[in-house]
Amino acid sequence: MRKKIAAANWKMNCTLQEGEKLIDEILKSGIVLQEHQCSIFAVPYPYLINVQHQLTGQKNYFVAAQNCHQQKSGAYTGEVSAAMLASMQIPYCIIGHSERRMYNNETNAILAEKINLCYDNNITPIFCCGESLETRESGSQNDFVAKQITASLFHLPVEKIKTIIIAYEPIWAIGTGKTASTEQAQEMHQYIRSVLSDKYGKAVADDIPILYGGSVKPDNANELFACADVDGGLVGGASLKANDFTAIIKALPG
Image (cartoon, rainbow, N blue to C red; front, side):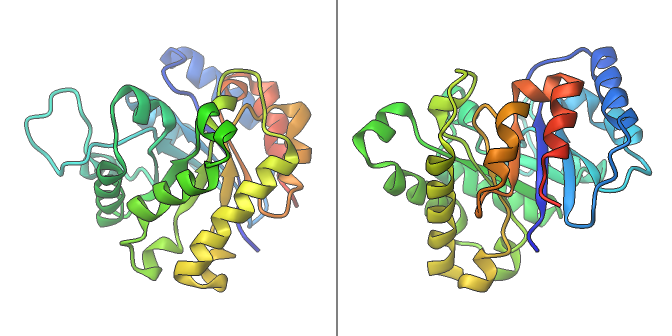
């Protein structure tokens, strides 16, 4: 059975104290995750160690970085390398979030380098892909997303690609309150899986978790996660409220 994942992306939110309280409240809910379920908290860099310590001993709860640099090391003031994350034993890293593509001009080629460095350092990438409203309305969303995947991931050998997590984030549904319909979400997730299958085979594609990342909330999580090819969510705003994110974790298929 594919992993079912509730991933929180705090973005640039929460003070250290607020973040510690948020994690504490979620853990106090007493959710026991099954073997095929996990919850991942992508927190700002300064909080990685603190959150990692808070999650110690919590089965199937993990911390993630929100990004890493595309170079191994060097004169890149303010940046963080994959090797630095690995030295702290951070197991996951978000790569290619639409906000970084947009605000930091991250190209598919740059993201391929980041993916390589994650794997070189035994970090599992959570690779984001997705289209703008303009692309969706033009009907070219499939070609657009396929290009993102092929350009950034298809150089990987099968033993690496089979461990990746993919997050489909329709950009027009991030922070806008809009959500893709369950039909739209399932359609794109199924298409992404078919793209992976064409390259790596059905058995590999069927094992890769694909998360939905567009305004997941407690009132739509159950319906979204019930889709055959939706394996959980990469959650933004709702992950900053303990009750909301707890409800989303509980919505993961058993």
